[in-house]
Image 1: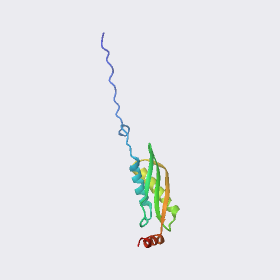
Image 2: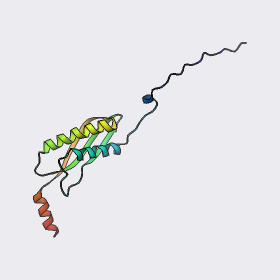
Image 3: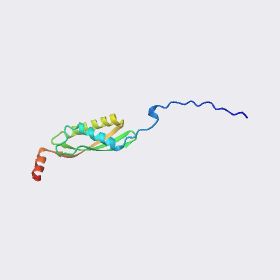
Amino acid sequence: MAAESTPPVATKEIEAAERGATTIADRVVAKIAAQAAREALVQVPEGGEAPHATVTVHHDHARVRISLELEYPTDIGEQCRAVRRRVAQRVEALAGMEVPEVAVQVERLHSVHTRRAAQGRLR
């Protein structure tokens, strides 16, 4: 019997984007989101905590929850809108993820009066 020869298999070059996967940890996206929230705020209150983010990533979508403190008085609604916009933009730009939801939770309002009262109690 004669050996059968198989025709050569054409190899197709695989595009770089199709060769593997990139995974970005939730904590990395949370750091991006927290920094973006800091950038969006007019100011972080004196004696206040910097914004903190928690993130849930599913495929290429990130759901973000930001906890922050604001100076009083301020337009709370406008500050929250600015934070939502900035966080969504930065996460999309830096992590390549869609951000369908940015929930902002205002934990505390800081005013000059409350700082003065707190300083009086510490003395």
